[in-house]
Image (tube, rainbow, N blue to C red; front, top):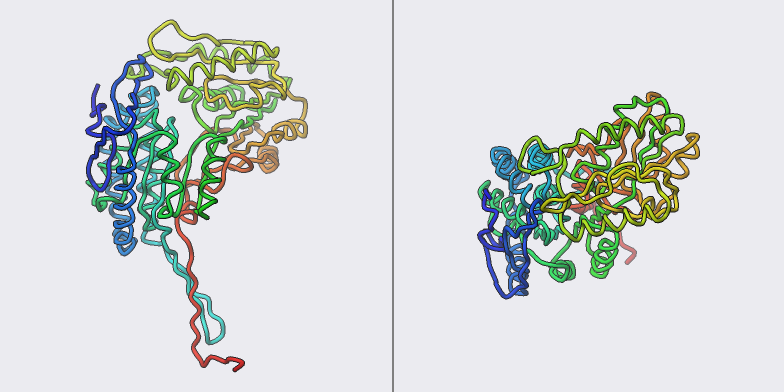
Length: 485
């Protein structure tokens, strides 16, 4: 083990590590072996109060800093994070089980991108001037106050910065609660931000189960809640936030469609389907797990897909040649196994995979089903594991109609050599983050968020600033006030 997999303490509050053994003990397990690598404690009421009070105090001062001053802190944090990419990637792999080959390029690097991008925007957060004859109105973009970030377990480093960077750029403070399954990486982000010059209390990390998140969401001192998680969790958090009229960003799950037309480049389409289903062992919210393949190339697609999956190297995530790692936990593996069983029982054809590997850890083979119908469980429910459902279709209109027949709308993709068709189909698909001849690209410059049941608001890009600030308008009268009496 390396890079402090055993945390100095469970929480990072007011610029220092904080422990309170009165909270429930939470075991941190390395998914590749099933061994415990750390033990943390859920936040007690005293820890939550310390986080809230320090955040309220510090936010008032941080909001007085100029945008450029705040931006320097974020960009310096990005520099530090890039310098420590390897140890942070190792920690991410211990936290999640994702192969180091992947974490080296997709996790701390993405977090650094967010810090750098929003650090660069912080100095340009301006309002506008509206001339009304001799009178005029000016607007000010103000921070919301204390924001709460609730993280998912699949991208702990990235999510902490996707939420923290725009919040801090706008002058807010953040209290971040990681998933109890992957709690380690956010503590290092808090360390780095403090080292980069963030005042103590600006970015606090508290650990815990759902009750800790609930206490934060319901506290009247919290102005904004940003969740990355499942739709059922989003419903509960959204309702609780609405009770206090709080701002929200909900980045939730999906059952996204990937449409592959007969004229698509076959290898590119297979590569896109692999990225849309098996990257991070399938544990990505935007995954295109309903793969609609036009009938004329279905057999060729499946044959090439099976060949490519044969090249996956399943093994020790710390070996940089490993390209496919374990699921995050025993519980998640059992959930995915249950879906595989249901897929077989409901009549889908198991093309490849479907078995747990006979080794330590939570390893499951990449799994592909064909002959899937729209009403099968594996085609309607989010699995969050390495399970691809292949459905076939005749024509464009049919594919669009079936692709949209879902309550979700996070992502969608299309592979075709006909760019007119590509834009036409994407324009008709009901989803927020879409791809043409690609899948699962998520640069910080592009907004990321879902439609329908897949979320509210957007992360990343300039759009995120709208969700972490609020406008104030000021009417200035230059002449006398006329009143009726």
